[in-house]
Amino acid sequence: MTIEATPLPESEVTCANCKACCCRLEVMLITDTGVPDHFIELDKWGCQTMGRLEDGWCAALNRNTMKCTIYENRPWVCREFEMGEYGCISERAANP
Figure 1: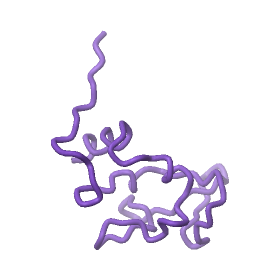
Figure 2: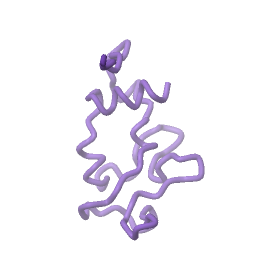
Figure 3: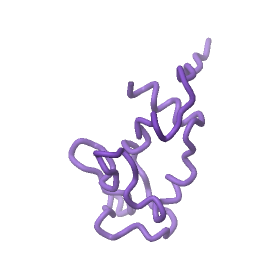
Figure 4: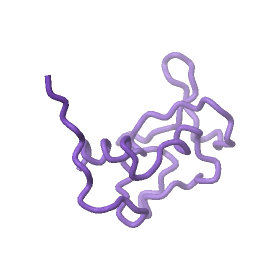
């Protein structure tokens, strides 16, 4: 059995070329970071998650700048998801 590695991006991932792919992932709120209530939804199990719009993007994402509007109060999961790390590169490859 062979395991295929995720291809590396053609260039380094920076704020200037970020595609905000992570903003399409489901984000559970497991700590209180101050996310405004109007961005919080409950999933079918009653857990708090970041709200998402009909197209699947995070409700806190500014669509013009592709930047987080609650960056200082973003969820813990978002704080741990690092730009350019494996998860980021994997999401970019899956969502070209």
